[in-house]
Image (cartoon, rainbow, N blue to C red; front, side):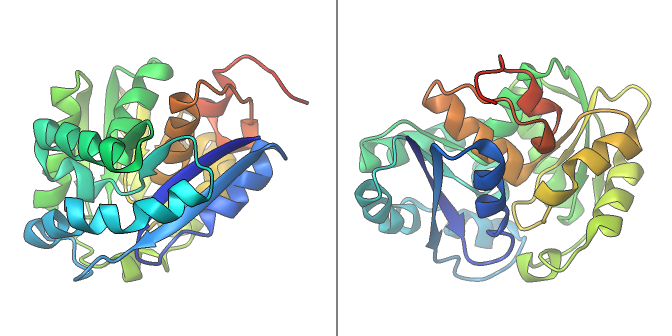
Length: 243
């Protein structure tokens, strides 16, 4: 059994995690602990507070008791908003508090893009433009070239949680560019796990989404290899180790 822990801000698209657990296999457990988000706003000051060490530490003990072998802060905007150095410090603090390997969704995107060989990416963000630009800057600092950024100006995770497949696809299409190796949809409040094969088929290229890469990152931290094509191209890059 591989037990993975996630600190998820508030309530939005957390039902993506039991769905991924079903697709990953019977010996992988995904445990989600909800953190207090404070104000639900895709605004820099609110995001900085949402990802503060105190808010993350509050959920760590529950994950430790669950037997988690690694923990990921399942929030993109609440990590990249700190900048690359600040995001590193956030993860180090989380690892120390948990006594476990740790990461965040922002780093998961950087690692996942590298895994699939996506050197140039397009970003389809639900966020306001200024917040979307911070994600692009974060990725550039990690060595990933960003060829396009499309922001939508949505202020709350609660609104994003109500988006369906058609709206997610429209966002991805608006962001896409011919020279993009992959399309990134960075909001963990966006339901995408049920739509990954359809999104990739419609766009004819890999699509990386927040909850998908977060689960993959937790597996990476535990050196676990899983082949799960229903979770997109990212989960076909590993050697096949289960039926």
